[in-house]
Length: 175
Image (cartoon, rainbow, N blue to C red; front, side, top):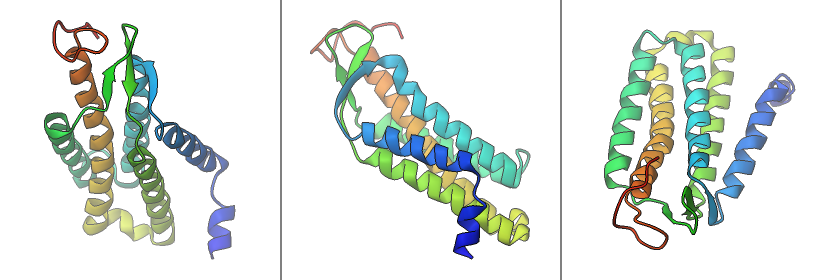
């Protein structure tokens, strides 16, 4: 059965996994980048998450509500309590981002959740209408989305607080 699952997996799915692994490996090291590059992964993860919720459970019911509520709460918590990953870089509009394994772990978890839930609803189509399955999958996707967006919000707040390279206080830069 596993062989059949892997052979029927569309090629674009493996391309997405490859992209996520590459981005996760890049996130392992501390690097300097333009502030607008911080938006890439939160946007990609939000779109992938929302597409999956819509395809499996629709956008007008329990699934979307659970996804949105979980994402919003997670964003609020991270934006308020998480430590920023960015510090000023030598050039305006650029930041130094601290490396971490957590993005790789989360992106892999998102992929695994998407893959397993997709297989589950193909094998047992009634799971699309199962409230328990809907809640579990949509809450997981909401947590993942909320993490990436909340981290972005926290980093942008830190960026606005930079007064110049090496200084975390002072006049805010426009974003």
